[in-house]
Image (cartoon, rainbow, N blue to C red; front, side, top):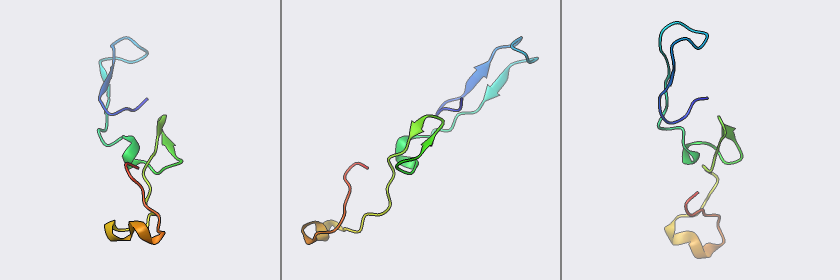
Length: 66
């Protein structure tokens, strides 16, 4: 299963020669939409917040750390 790092399949495991499954360091929770899971990595990214730093007391939506 893909992860953030490269994986190797040993020679003789139904294949000939060493095989590499490339990893992707961007496969992290904060890069995946909240409510979605990719390769068992649950997402925490949200993009529906409407507040800026000056709006926090104005009743708008904001997120801290996802």
